[in-house]
Length: 302
Image 1 (cartoon, rainbow, N blue to C red):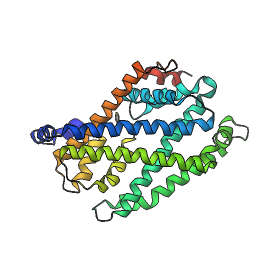
Image 2 (image 1 turned 90 degrees about the vertical axis):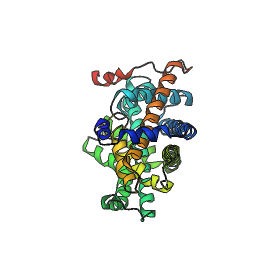
Image 3 (image 1 turned 45 degrees about the vertical axis):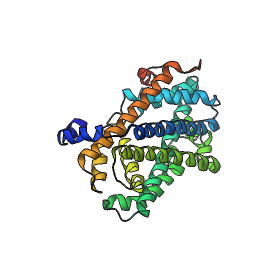
Image 4 (image 1 turned 135 degrees about the vertical axis):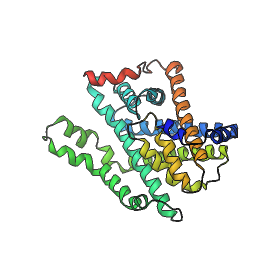
């Protein structure tokens, strides 16, 4: 995907864009992105503890960053999510429950991201946005919220009352549907996480000298990140660059500059994954998982 985009981009202009990047702003963008992942590990910890996972935060932190490293080896976040779920499970009997903490973490993050993008879209009607995006801002947020609160509870009704899956959703996962304080607090943390990730893109754009109003990032970065969740690329690479070309082109940013920002953002994501690799190697926690990306096979063999 990226190679096809590069073939249609003036490489000399692209090189000039990178050569003019200001290192200080690039470093600031990377640090902002890396710190957002720390916030994400806090959110996951908050969602896991009501289900009985009482490990120290340092163990969640180490597992989360190890998962970031594992995500470099599989599409989307599959490998990292499987690895951190198996780690906190602590045994075969709690693996299903551990995986639900991952689904809840991703699901809540998705709902909040949708709301951030939708609110920004509705409050900034001056941009020439595609009609589906504008109308979707009215429809998708309430749909995702209702799906979060009631979807799983309705789906499991197809199982018998004594089914293990129905019991887990209706009883074990009750905090995710009934504990409104937990939902509010984790939503606030998720909002902070997304704002930091969007802020990192603003800083990277500043590094390249792009004159894009920062509120516009609240519209297009969530849209591109949602598209990047599809398990068809590694860490959203390719989808991110095409998305940036499309949305930034609507505010008269030249193709080579949009591609440069997309590639720089992808580089920050990959570098953060390598930081996760350092945690994997050196984190001083005797219980830190020493799984490899092949840990995905564990689930398949069961």
